[in-house]
Image 1 (cartoon, rainbow, N blue to C red):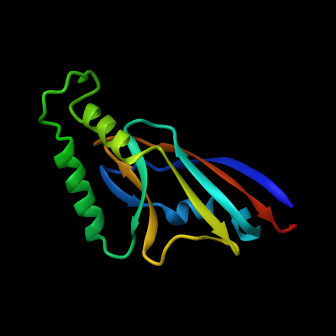
Image 2: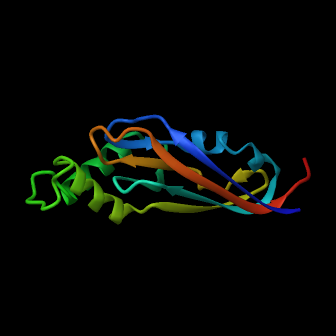
Length: 144
């Protein structure tokens, strides 16, 4: 049976940085365990945080990725859009660079991430608050 499942996932507030959220995403989709083959689309409903897939084994990758993004769009630049604070416009730039969505293949009841890959929320604000994701799974599903 081919089917669509869509639901929101409200993430807890996280500090600025790169946060591994793979288990939160998969935990919000118990139907993934019925997916023979399909595709998961993950979309973030914010413009000051973003999503990416990257190495999930060494936490230094998260530190270095955040460092690189802060160098690409530093708060100290002469931004015009500053009404929401000095971290807001750099957050929008980082969001545009990293992206608002991911598409991840699924098969045999799991996401087909590589051995060392994980899903990350990149929080670009000092106090971004809770973040809303929309999870959409489409695939050939086993009967419950």
